[in-house]
Image 1 (cartoon, rainbow, N blue to C red):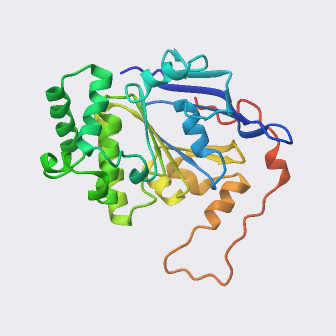
Image 2 (tube, one colour):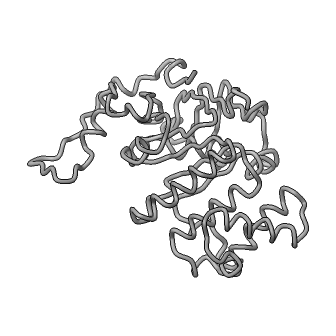
Image 3 (cartoon, rainbow, N blue to C red):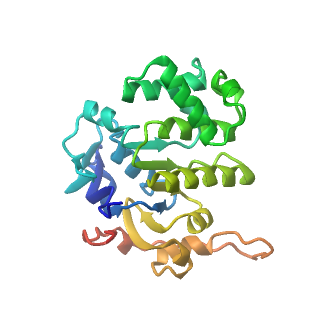
Length: 289
């Protein structure tokens, strides 16, 4: 198995034009991804999801994506048009979004949606695509895949819908899966089941996983490395198991605000932000070896 990075980003920038000048939603983000589970955490609006969508080529006009290096394996993403990204999505890199109800087509059975992905990338017959879809539904631990294949999105639970989305995203065998808050709409027990399925699939296929979340507890227990984002930039990188040893004041503030079972507080900690955090960081910050 190659040790070369699956994904390499250097100085990724996402810019939206505005009346008062350009707004930089992502600023000089640099990292690489191997065959590992990488977590990206931060508050809402910190640039986590925008980073994931930029990698997928899903930033809508008039937003601009710029980067010194943006490479998927040996493929340069900086010069790709929409047609080029469509060839990569699903086949090389896939993304699972937060709520399957907004991602699944309500007028097509879930099985046909999974099979359609297989047919698009492999030009397979209907019979071969159906067989592959049923096999994939079984792989994500869905009981009675024949029955579920013929159901519509409104007929499945949130947990099953998320498993169906995982099946759809992985049926073409991508190298990288980006999961954007994949468990936030699920209860705790179902969250663990969905995470276990993703972990199993990533390990068995030798994939890379980017887990985008605001849940520091979840990321610390599930991922191998963590990138902490604030105001569109990476302020800290650490091993997930040592997240509690974080040094940046922002990360410490996020950790201090986490609730603790059995520990009552007279006053919740308040995250105090420093204007100096907004100063553009050098390209080396956030770059992974």
